[in-house]
Image (cartoon, rainbow, N blue to C red; front, side, top):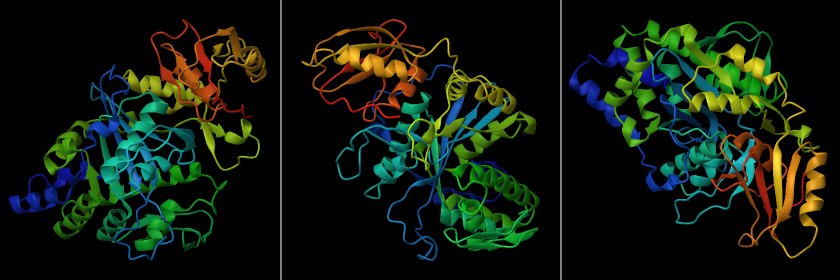
Length: 430
């Protein structure tokens, strides 16, 4: 997305310049890998998933060469409003504990649905090096957990990031405290200095030595760095050598869906963005809380905080603007104790009393069981379905039932999430 805005400066250059840069951009069709069970595009606007790949390809093994898989180091959803008057950039913490659906791999196999960090989805789909499958799995995971349809995707790799920074002779950062981060291979004194190469990459990736050691502080630092990078690039628009180096690195780092693969579609997309007032572009992070609150002992991950996360995703799906202040207010408002998630529990096994037993455990966790009963065995597997309007409640229940994948169902009990117990039902957690 950042590169898309900057190509505006190159739009009027010679044909050879335009053709060479456009040819740098790789297209990857996700096609059938997304499946048919996708959220409906109901409210207008455009959603673009931006994936920062932590692939070390092209870095000569000098940075993080011990990493065995490619994961999405950064994951953002950019929503451009249908009116063109505002935009929202939502960052997903990479440690978000979510449901990763079944994904097609490049070797013809399909992964098993399971719960894990959201950044692993890209690695699962791309286990054999297939970028399209990697993107498709990341998209499926975001769509399944956020309930928002993704229209386009852009993948940016590490090599392009360092090339963009170096083409601008570095970017100034001003840490207030010294940074000594062994994993990011970063050693910076306090105060302002210009960073490039591995220092720049380490600065946006450092996490363990700064703040609380989570990904949340790093998200804010990455957003600040991108603002500084774009500001410096803007000041170099009339320096052909710097501009070409920047755009060459930017475009070489990009892989997009076929609809965005080329300078022309990126230019058209950037044209939609350029007139959005700066104060109408909101940079947000999915509201979250430590997973240890639900699963004692897990200090490494976070879960999305309801009802705020659900309100944010609903706004995106309906093309409604949400400001930082509105999201902060929603995040500070817990789910009403008088209105817990309503659940119908059905026993689909041959063991009597399973529904009543589980209903009691769900009640202790704060859910409101509205009915229990029996049901035909669901093909040997438990199911969790929800009617329109209760997707967030189904996700909240699923965090306590590892292995269950919430699914919309027109036939679900009216006004309640429906849990049908099969012989495979895992134990409750938390």
